[in-house]
Length: 392
Picture 1: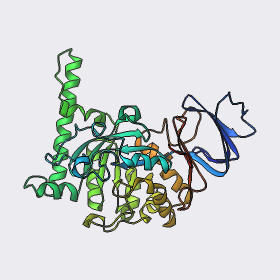
Picture 2: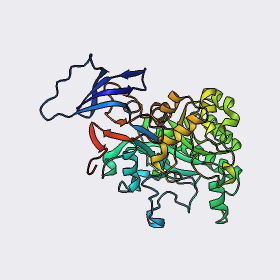
Picture 3: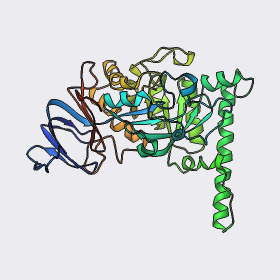
Picture 4: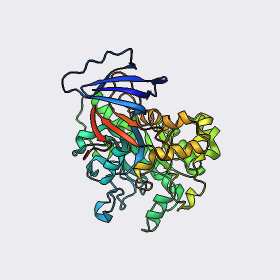
């Protein structure tokens, strides 16, 4: 397949006006100006010609619950929170994601080709996120990285859920204490396993603790649900105590402590700002947060937190952040390269470069503008959406 014309926004070193991309075997084989790449399509090989449009990496949603909280299904389709035990790190999102959820089709139609999907925030430790492509029937075939993160939550959600059941945690102190207790158990388990292997002894693995080993090895981050300033700093405190990688998800009051967060070095996934302030801890939520954090030097991505805001609104959320002060180019990066880097999949996604997956979105213009249309969505070199096609 060849894509010719338009403006190619590579997200990896500048734009290419009137460019050309050659795709084969699901990967990007060549990218450059039209006069740099010889176009010799094989018989029946597709050539997509773009006039005046924007060609860019497929958009990435860095934090959502599509397929695990299904639309219009009620309790029967809600598998987001195991609300009977506050510490469930061993749960795996891939065991509950229904790829037949209509949100996957909505994502594809919006040019969204990848999403980080996982449990909600009712538990102190909720379980393992997975990063998936957005087109396909069998979840196993969509996995880019699993596990991709470990969900932990601070603040109102665990408090409200468990105080209502008459058990811990009912305070922020208990949330932090329970997470520390679990991390200490995990460290002790890892050490016992290491010693047993060094000594050639049999070691019986514990399923409920094995899930922490990629976190302790810094292979995947804690994915911390934090809105309020105090909860953000508690998450930072614990991550530093245990020397862990972490993303600050939602980070609704991050703009109030932007310089401090920049100094700490943890990235932020901001949103859902296109939603009501329906909880005390989100009273300071605003689209300006992304721009303030970005200017301070915090690596930022944007989230819809679908279904809190609908997945297809992601590029528009980036546009509203730009309207509130985020530089335009940073708006593009927040839903492509930055999101891929924060999610740990930048080796394959998030920019248009030779060797990367051919996950590409083609728009009639800037996707952050409300009247822009998705012309094509391409995943693994296959056109999975085409404007005007009878089906996709």
